[in-house]
Amino acid sequence: VSQGAICREEYRARGCDVDAAMVNMVDARRLDHVRAELLDRFKDENIDLLGVLPEEKLLACPTVAEILSALNGRVIYGEKFLDNIASGFSVAAMRLDSCLERIPGGNLVIAPGDRQDVITGLMASQVSTTMENIAGMVLTAGLEPAPPVSRLMRGLRALRMPIITVDLNTFDTATAIDAVRSVIRPESHRKIDTVLSLFSRHVDAGSFREKISVEAPETVTPRLFLHKILQ
Image (cartoon, rainbow, N blue to C red):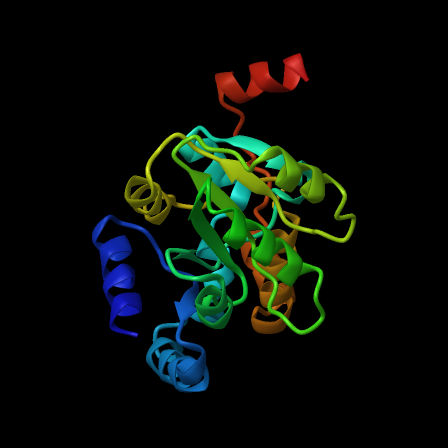
């Protein structure tokens, strides 16, 4: 709420009229409280509150494709699943049974490329109906699975995750993944659907459309005249 007031004053200090406001990244638990307080603050200043949107952590999470690009990695399985979203990452430095107990669903798993036990165990977990789905696997140190494991990998039709390999060691890989910042691209279908859903549920679309509609100017500048001719 304080940030909204600061932004309003900043615009006014620059000679801008504030006609409407929309606030995002609000703690979902305080959504109604923030909306009520902003409505109370803005009503005496004739500022319309068009919407208050909750924070959605998924929008900030990178896809495996973004991580692949940032780490200059190579895909060894599941290229069509690179749009999987990594909600976090886990380093598989333990025994397989410990990994299966501790890796949260949606995480990207980092493992040395020669940990055949972890690789096969995690692949098996992804075709099981009793285990959490993970976003994918990153194999480190430039190592790839042994030929029998690669053959097993190619034969798992129900495996819906990508497996990539990178030249970095495990620590540097984790550090690099932690530094990846996601953006919403035209191919980010799941994120786009999430944004549209948030907008439809929390924004007054009619008022928003009205506020962004502008009348065509009556005065025609030389540049605008030239633009119309070229059209």
